[in-house]
Length: 542
Ligand code: VG1
Ligand code: CO
Image (tube, rainbow, N blue to C red; front, top):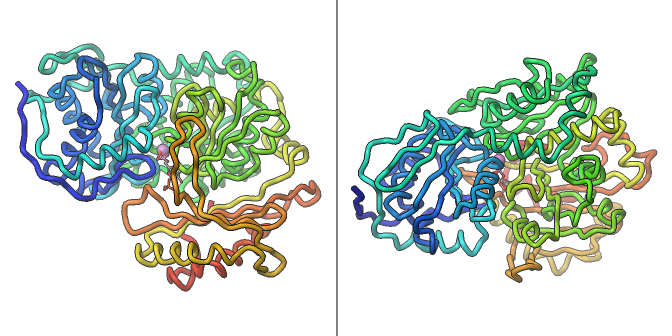
């Protein structure tokens, strides 16, 4: 019932920041997905008879690859597969299911915030037994296998029925189709004060959540409307669509513009939020105020003990290097550890497993905690709601008070998408070549204090990750960071991260782009962005 199929390697299967992401037509090439999945299995040891979790964000090609992955898991010797009904599992829900059922690992099919559809993006990611993205040593091994693969194993059976919950047998392996929402919703009930949130909503606190036609729709409907009693209709675009309705399921001020405008209106609800394609990102907007993800991380950490799941306090906070230093000030005040990691959730896993950090975050709208090993969009929304229900203040008041206490980190990211790869690499190389000469250089009123290419030394397994982004640090704590995206699928995306710390509360009401104007100009002077990319403006400003 199982067969071995001969194949030849593809040369472009190197996992990026979060798994292998390519256009759908690339994945549709003969044996392309099969090669990658077999390379995952070939990199692992000891999974015979064990459980594998499989699920995805429902985008175009999800069901096809789920069928392939199940048949290959059977042929390779897994004992059981847990798969979400309809092939659906949000990334944080997949992480939870792996942990709860002590699975060997999981395959998560998603290209996250990238658009979906027949000519758009698809992705495959492997998560290890702790529920988190495979660390670099595993992804490096997978890549090595993709370069030499000669055959893959697959069960020669009919397609599995993904739409009926319950057990089926596939070539000697059990496939269990599970409810994708219930385990996750139960976990949320253990972390947050649902009765308090329910009472706050019943008292007239109005929320709106945009699921962006992506995977969080069913989760948000169940949790926010059914379990917490938010008004029917509070969750928008809740049906996951294979092409996300033709939009980018990226919860930022560009792609969730309508939500932003609603939240800035006179009759705005009290709280607005959105999540991305696979449910691990969050956008938080209070009535009249967008909360940057970096600020959200800091504010959540500062108030986390108001939620039952964190009442005992936090062990530490971790943030990715480009994320603003706002969380550092909270950690300092709380007297707990702060960790600075490279971009990508896989670097938080060791810190969480070792109990060094409890809450983690990235400037790219990812926040999460030790409850799973992925970032978690709805978790962030629920923690905000829990805090708001207890404090009974508005988001804007909480933010203002936070800045008064800790100072404000003005922060913005400028993305230049689909830039010519050679130009983008040239820009980074030229910056790297200047690093030694930059300290002491003046740009207007700014003086460069330090410049480096970020290297991370994992405090737990002592692995080292080099070239994780170029940092230009100015006297007084402002900085500009440059790196190239590891999730894009066409050309290169240059990300420029700009930050200024402002301790003076009298200066906390300035427009962010205005507050950062001299740093933005300095970034262009140093890197020659306009000249090298031919772009006069960023594609996306968040
Ligand atoms: C981007 C973000 C990063 C995030 C990654 C995956 O990576 O910057 O913070 O972890 O996407 O997010 P890059 O390499 O393009 O900058 V998602 O929601 O895939 O899962
Ligand atoms: Co995502």
